Image (cartoon, rainbow, N blue to C red; front, side, top):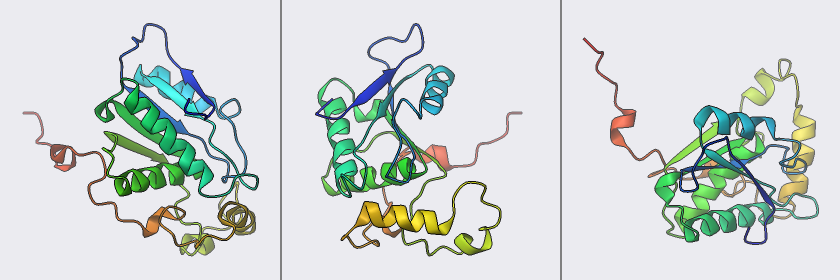
Length: 193
């Protein structure tokens, strides 16, 4: 799809013109594939009754930043040019894929491209500077990743780029106008009487 490997996941009975979730996997920007990260997109598809497009974006060190981001921008534009309205596209990313989802929206905003209707983030890696307090305060309770591992992966991904670039570390970005756009969504609901 636009030169990027991607896999469709669809529950039975879903029509061709239904909304789609664009799923970006984790893996610290250096590993992962839609075949090895298929549990989350399969569950998303069946629980939401929506099609999910799992994207195999380029990985470091062979393809450092901005290769993976360019891949997901191309896939998003491909969807928009092949019958999917941004109002029917949601983006979900976990870990590095969550950071990449935020970077994707920041880049689309720079390109003056209409943003998708929703974004979902599962433990996004959005600060590759590793400067947040929880890197230290929660270091003993993280069952999977250590600061040293993340630092090595960040160096492979970022290479010569400024690690505070919002497209690398989205925590430094401007999220004004990001989805969801429905102002009522953010308002407290009145209880049903």
